[in-house]
Image (cartoon, rainbow, N blue to C red; front, side, top):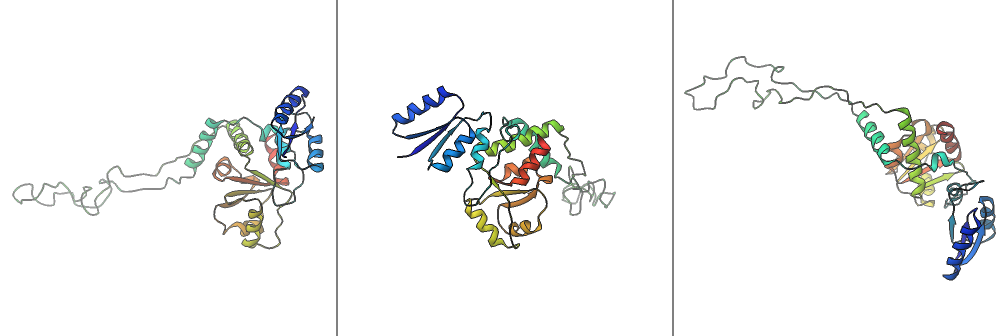
Length: 266
């Protein structure tokens, strides 16, 4: 028989949910707060947890993160609700991602118009009597080495985004990963040697085949270990952005990286 853990700081809600689940044949374990829930998880085999997001000592999001890790021994991590429990604003995410992609464009493309190419200033042949179509100049677009119609010219594609909008987008992106249960926290990501097979084992333990690995600082060993793995990218917190977070299915963080993110965005 499956055992369900109910975590809520309101007794009425705990009792109501418990009644429904008991009627369905489930075993029930109740906890008032996050600490009691952690104790239940350590003492019993829990198959499912029903969590209240808003709790006094530890929110439901933080509790999920502590026990949503598979394959590796991870320390307990309490996530900031202000960052990882923010309302997801899709309009802001679209604005920031669009601006980011536009800013990646170099805008250095250039081609010559008919006024800029070299060529005859006179007609290549007389207008009538040759049996051929009339031509005004060898610089016309239909001629080899002629000018380009509507030739592209260097331009600046840069789009500016307000800092407050960027912060909201970052919080929305991180929160969306929590909502999708697609965020994993390691206590540390220590790899003895920069070998691909070592990193492949780590990713296999958490069943991540498309992931962004976020580190507190630049780590050449981890970067080299992931460089040959398809759909896996490593980045330090300093260069983390909304586009990278949304591009990959799974977001992998270390405890130190979480602390650094919270330090910047809280």
